[in-house]
Length: 119
Image 1 (cartoon, one colour):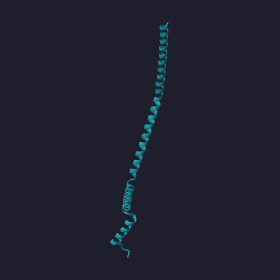
Image 2: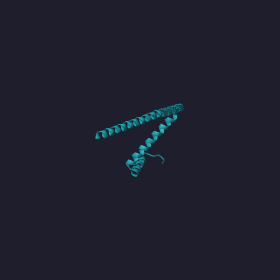
Image 3: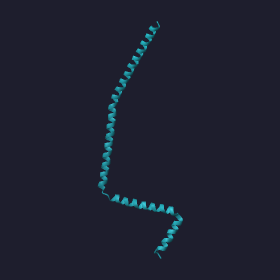
Image 4: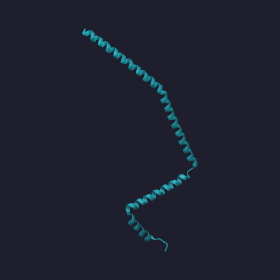
């Protein structure tokens, strides 16, 4: 009594197969295998040197600093470009006004020509 032999294991396996079905047993086995794999991987990561973790953290911090610096540089460039853009916009507005004035002058001359041609 107390010893489980091959016959008893076979009976337990058959009962489990009847209760859960073949597909469900495969899913259970897969889940157990993944759980064991993740557990082993966690043990390996815990055994790594804490120095390596500190180095990784330092690398991440330096990457974040460089990203922030790049963003700040981009913002400065945009601010530097704003006055130039304003000047360009003002110049283009003036050019448009000049063009409008020239068109109105041309229209007036055409009217004068028409009036002279009618007379």
